[in-house]
Image (cartoon, rainbow, N blue to C red; front, side, top):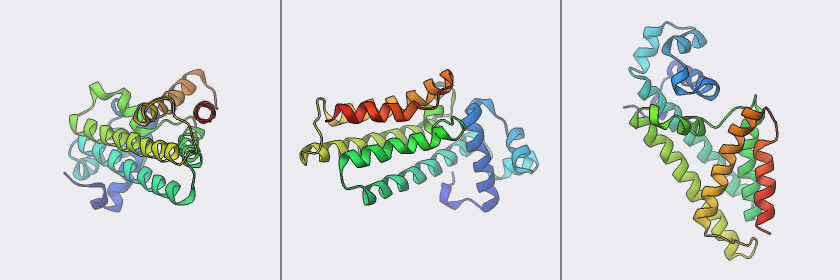
Length: 193
């Protein structure tokens, strides 16, 4: 199976379309026919680049995880405090949600985990584990520096924040409200003071 860094520009357009479709209708809500229409190519061309939908899903998640990881590294470089890093992390979710109440790709796929291929599930799990570890590290460092106060173990708080952000996007879409992730950020950061 290919890695996202090995795909051609034509394949990247297919991945762009699949990512957009997953955000709006989920993994099981689109077909290669939908992708071919969005990209403006024939369905066999989609199959040429991605013989299975599972392979396409893996590439979508790998690329998304890579881009998200780059943003985490950027946050680490530009924000010196734990509170600043946590706010910037929450802002990533707010930015995504502000685009037509879009959901996180991995949140959307996580909701469908019983109905997506195992290879895609592995990549989704990797995304969440990486995020939870990053958050736990930020929380631990912030507590050690005396910047924040933790009332629970860092790993537990990391899982809580990640779950709350993902859930706020889903609930916000369902309730048709715009503040979802931003409310979570405000409440979570206030609890660390």
